Length: 240
Image (cartoon, rainbow, N blue to C red; front, side):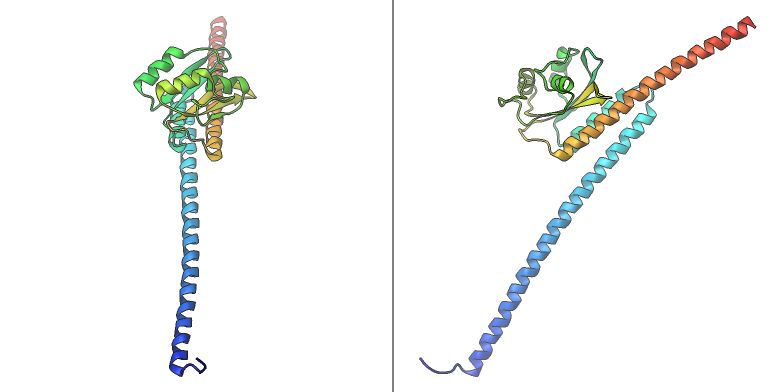
């Protein structure tokens, strides 16, 4: 009906309006706080991941400096860190001598998986396996599910995946002046692709592996030359 609201009713609605403003402001502040928390969580995760990667890289470089005559400890460290930082099931590193791939190091493989791999290698690289394909192509091979038909699903890798119990695989070649000297594999039990960041990390590990191989080669060459010089000096002394 026609008529004014009482002052008490007007005051009551004004109170409700003020409370509504408070509610809107609270929602805005809560949303902002939630977004900031999410951003901080992501930043913290990235910082933690970056710190872990830097720690792994430093560890590998330290092992390289401590193993001038043997690449095995370096590859053990590389494969272990690659599996851990890529959320993998296990990993393996192969050395390529220009003719055959041979197992150099592996991490977290079951005894049955080790036996299967030992029976399969050394062998020439083949497009039927992810390792062989990475070496022949000189590029990263990444398959999120080896049991699914596809251009990068080799029959040997598919069968090995079924036997060992993995689905996803990442194979990164080690290249020295563009020529393959080995390959690093990381596998996952579930059909889930590796991230770009993880692929880049394994590429870094592959570069470090090449440095280790080159260091051992140079050290052995230097040792051989030193032995030759020592022998020559001895012969000169004998002649004198």
